[in-house]
Image (cartoon, rainbow, N blue to C red; front, side):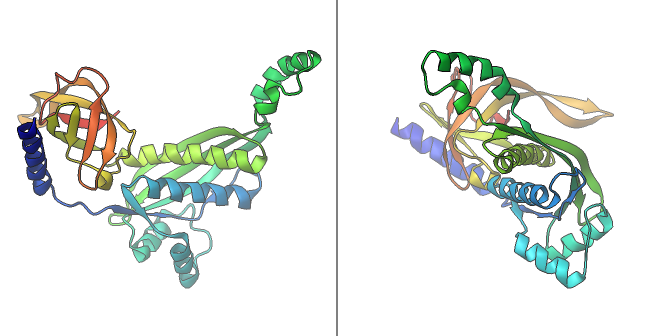
Length: 284
């Protein structure tokens, strides 16, 4: 067992030493335009804050601080750059960002939570039976919905690398809380789109008993609890005489149980006997 552990650690050290340190990409979130017609300042503020939190917490990107972005805006005399990619590129370069995100909130709705209506009848019945608390007492009264239309601009080339709409829907005890929750969902959906530009890819560096070591860690945005897919490369895919990719056969899923800067330890969610060193690991 000791020899297996040493072998796994040695293999991990070799693979980690061969990896080039990739600097995290920097994202500048530009001031959002709100065309939803609902409380412009509040919705734009909450959405911007949740975007920054989501990008920063991913571990994959560095986000330009709002104070720094505000200083640049004031110094350059910019007013509304939400719908002008050329201005966003200029500002992004000044902030040192690789990407600039420009966008607008196209929908913001706070309504009575439909779930509350559904349980109201049950709540009334329970109170008739002498129960002081009902199901309705535990259901948030407000449901927030939000839609964010965004464009992601490469500040080096000026190219719009992505243009999409993401939405979020979540309930809360007050309109403010509901919007905050809905914006968080929309920000998480935005982050998934952002991650698709540079998809996560790792390899199994070694296996010791139930522990599966992979050659990416916190620096690649991994967090404890993440579920990853393990696949094995087979034959190449050839187009016009060139190998463009490798066919992959999925073997199962693994769960991250420990994260270090350059590697992580995982456990198999199913049969681990089919896994081996060198297998490809990607996000589910």
